[in-house]
Length: 465
Image 1 (cartoon, rainbow, N blue to C red):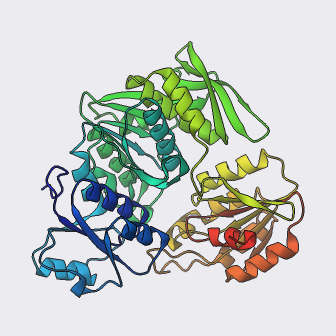
Image 2: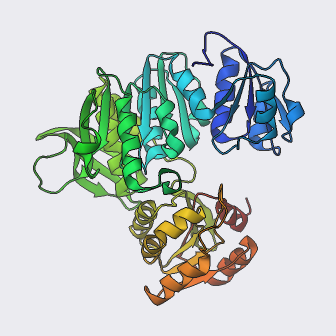
Image 3: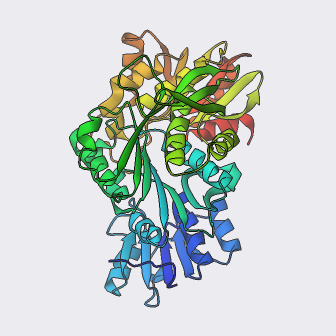
């Protein structure tokens, strides 16, 4: 059942309105004439910005925030069903939907729905695609999982029939979406606390691809294992893409040729289709992984009829999103980078990019994200971290979990020391880590705060932000 129609304004309450995605959709509904209010646990820059637009925000989340005049309550997947606001809404007979269902309903109000899915590279690829769509003059409504300075945040409200969103697979959220065109960057084991095993995760991506109508389009990463099996039931047109590829047959439909990197690690290449060269692409973000991301975006855009010049200019506009190899600043000759990487594949890509810049030493402060992921990937996490010169571990960021896995940072310390012979330290407080960095970092070093939790606070404190 559809609860949100942008052409039929209602009174909508957001539980957790200060979240990066929830706040964006709250603003979208307000623009469309909805009466919007919500709650959050504490005040933030996001909630203050919402209040400045006239949206009522209640601090503290309790049952009496909900009244019978509310038409729909929206919550994130992280909110439990025994949350007092949800319980009260159900008692009053108010429909309760999660954020993914809201997005799905919103997408039905648009004609062209672009979605970017995949285990890695979603935020960067979605950001690149957003800028290409803007360069093409399509005036899209955009929603990202990160902050993109070029649109002033994570949400842009357009006035056309074009919508673009980052599509996350966790809890099968993206299966509530209605994409007409999509990218799937890659598929690797992830979120197995929800999926149980990799086969279930692959089935979820297969179902997502199946949502695209027969006249739609899907661009898929050439490196996805079992690609043919995963997408064999897809009715839409499927196009493959890759970064630079060796001499293989068959070639992906689109790929990068003659890839080169400048002193800042930013790539340039010849975009190719089959045996033909389309044109030159220049990027202003570092890393081979961003070359691959950009080819995926170019593939979907060109096959959707967007001119090459708009693709080229849009990709050149992308300077990165916050927390994606973001240079935070320098202190005492030490370059401080922050990155969201928390899966071993992402960590390897980030560390490889950092190495390409030839720092005197590479120091990584890593915050493991969730006990389940840490337990599952502890060997792979340590292998990725072993490419750093010095590793500092924080406590594990629990997020939504309780530690029923018996995993601790000391387990990783032991692997890094005994198996990889690395210098590695674990501190329970950020203050201790900041003191350690001030005492042990020197001119020419690169320091990366890495993880999907709040490890960025260490970078901000070191720089006095």
